[in-house]
Amino acid sequence: MYQRQESEYYRAKWKAARRICRGWVKPSDLPSNAEVRDEILALARLHEGGKQLANLRDMRIDALRMMHALRRFRPRLIGSVMTGHVRAGSDIDLHVFSDSIEAITLQLDEDGCIYDVERKRVRKGGEVRSFTHIHVRGRFPFELTVYAADEAHHVFRSSITGKPMERASIAEFEQFLAREYPDMAVDKAVADVEKGIDRFQVFQSLLLPLERVEQSKIHHPEGDALYHSLQVFDLARDALPYDQEFLEAALLHDVGKAIDSKDHVAAGLDALAGFITPRTHWLIAFHMHARQLLDGELGLRARRRLRASEDFEELMTLARCDRDGRQRGVETPDIDEAIDYLRDLERTFGTA
Image (cartoon, rainbow, N blue to C red; front, top):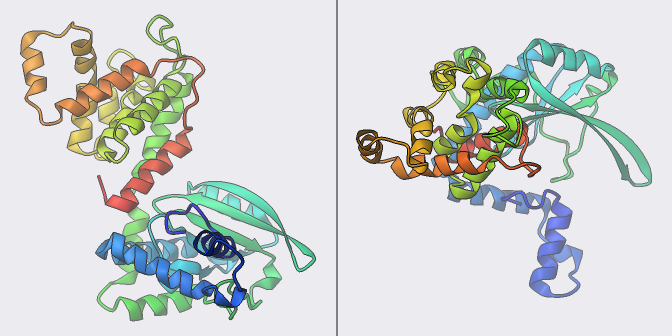
């Protein structure tokens, strides 16, 4: 469950019981959902250390920001961000109340959010209920569960403890944060988050136009520049799956082609200024030189300059991915999957 290979407590417990006991197990011998949750939290603290607490604080600030944005839908914070049981990859769970899903999505559109709407039918105790979830992408992912407006005061029960669910309105959550973080100016922290720019959304906005950039069929038989970029990213992920700076260079190396086809490297780097690290900048800046080196077309002095860098091997790996990412008909991740992978790396290992 910590690695998110299993999400349901019931299934996870029975799978573990069958694997350990090799047979039938009395339900009373299984741990409770609360006990499993506490062990998952202990594992998160072991693997993530102090980063887990810092991540929790940042997620709570982001939760309050979103609650303010959705104030008219009477949001209630629930789940792991409320209770503190977060781990790498956790989302922020909110209940929102409205008889119009479109009113909520309109607000998200106005705020420039990227989201998906999911509708589920759940059968429990002979009763079928429909639920609508809105998954909002961002620095931290949100799951908004939409209920009818007249259910705002309904007492929901936790699937983990069986007791009334821990939840907080905006006012209650602000008071909670003041108690939990007495040295933090909550209003200022929220304002800082609101002023911040999500660099991954910047990446997405620069990548999307590449789908309309057709390339030379001689050098790029695969097709448009976006398909090429996603191929390169996928190959780079196979080569160095945990090197975030390298992977960002692989995904973004051609974004300038939708801005200035005559000098796409300079155009791309100008658009990415402030959103990538110096190392990612260097990898993108010299990826064309590295291709020339692979092809035996780079001069001796330029070769020496490249080899002098401590990132030379990664640059040549990027060049090989760039060369090989030109196949017709191969499967690639889509933009959302690529961006989500980079987000997960950043949440797990810190800012690149």
